[in-house]
Length: 270
Image (cartoon, rainbow, N blue to C red; front, side, top):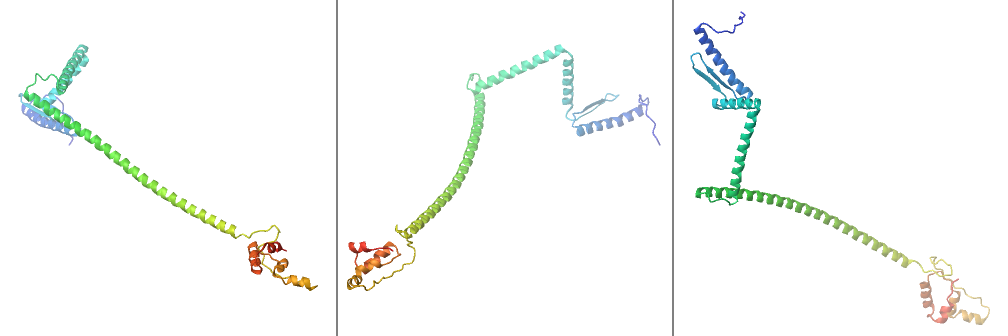
């Protein structure tokens, strides 16, 4: 069955009015609590019944809610009134001047000035404060030094690694140079050996690499004088045909007849 629309007006029946108040009061307080939890809002509800009985709810405390409310209303009033706004900023400036003066006094005391007005307890507190400040400064300094040392150690390790890499490269280059030196030395030795083994050339134009052919040309027996000359050992060299190097000719000459100036003049190449 559809409920009829309730007309919002004062309930004449006191009993019904009291029952309705109790129900709606509990519902209102429940909704205020849910609103503060769901929306993270600072909520305060104050209810006075017709019999002057107080019912309230505050998400934090009623004093905090009321104080915040009064401050907000005062700021709103100051914004609407220029004279009040000027007075407000004057008060703020006075508070800031007091804070500045207090900080300046504390600074002078920390510097060891104007200590005549302090008693033993105040001086002990000041000493403790200075020791704590000094301890904090030392810890900060040690931390900075530690960080710098770690950074330098990392740089040293990096430089050491680079040094090892460079040493490896130098060793490789040294080995390559030694290998190249050895190869060039062997090549020079081989070239020297080949140049030493090349046959000596004689301006006669004959090929000295040709095989050696030794022939004795016996003269025809024309007369006894010629035959006697041919039978002499030195005379055989006049008819010796040789295609050998000069050293071979010298060896053959030495074997046939001891080398004498006369025999050297008789050495001929055909």
